[in-house]
Length: 71
Image 1 (cartoon, helix red, strand yellow):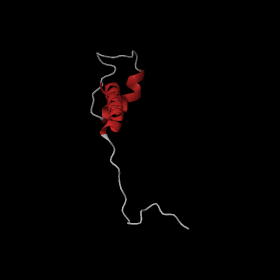
Image 2: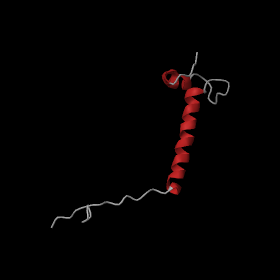
Image 3: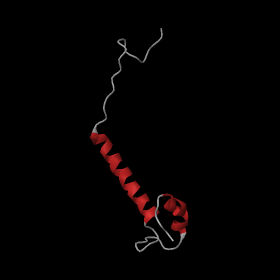
Image 4: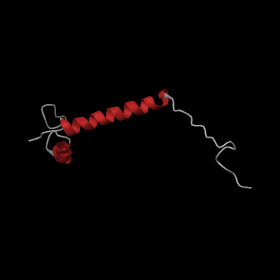
């Protein structure tokens, strides 16, 4: 006998995801995006956390692509 994943009535139930389950992931990715934005947009300036030109060279093209001036 074959088994089917669809119910006999042909309808499927979609369970909504609770906001409590999504909130920690949203906060994590929000912080991650802010850190990425800092490194692309502000690193190697007056608030540089890492000395040298390494970070600047790694994000140089992304900086121009997003419209941040760097030189």
